[in-house]
Image (cartoon, rainbow, N blue to C red):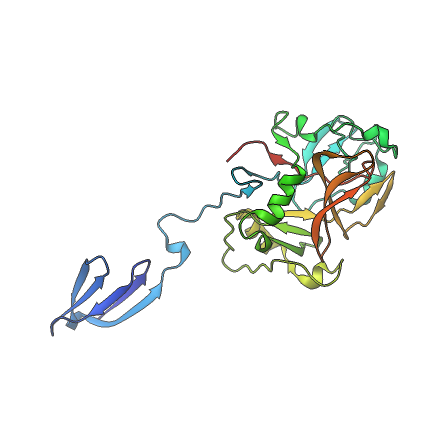
Length: 295
């Protein structure tokens, strides 16, 4: 006797017996397949898994920043090597320089990743004078790694607001987490589909620095999430002069093209909340760029 497994795909499948010796499997479009009853032992109807699709799911990894434009985030936070005068993105999204940012100087032979506002032309500036940050020069105007100048740019204040609040299902596409031992914020792309075997909890916890008590994402799980377009913004804190503060506690990321005489705007987040805020332009904050192309 034969056992037939029928996959329930999009149309309802109705099984009917029209004669004693034949069995017909009919779809809603009128088509059917017939079997001799004597050849059938049983019929099992199951849902078709995603992996059985003819065309596997391919994530776009894009984020809406207004009703018509989508961007792609850089593969990691921006970093600069003063001794080599080279820019790059962090090798991994979870990577950050940390306390070594206190060594910031034009002659420092190491990487830094906390920058004063708009210091694309002066990344080692550690002055605490407002006038030294009066003009915004986007970091994306530089050659970064193998990418030509102006391949990347900063998000504006309104673009951050749209990303966080106005795109479809925005509140379901952000969450605090400890990822592979690093605290920070996870951002998910517009077309997010949670990979098989992965669970992600959007939102925030009850305490400012309780990233790990809200959720922990291991390295293997994060690898799957990255493949589907997840972005991680590590909690790098900030630099004041050469003093590093709030490392692994707060996420502070610069926003471009918006500045007052005494403050500059930033994306700010803890394990408890995320919002747009303001700080002194001479503070050293993280920089995460996006692609300039419209997808």
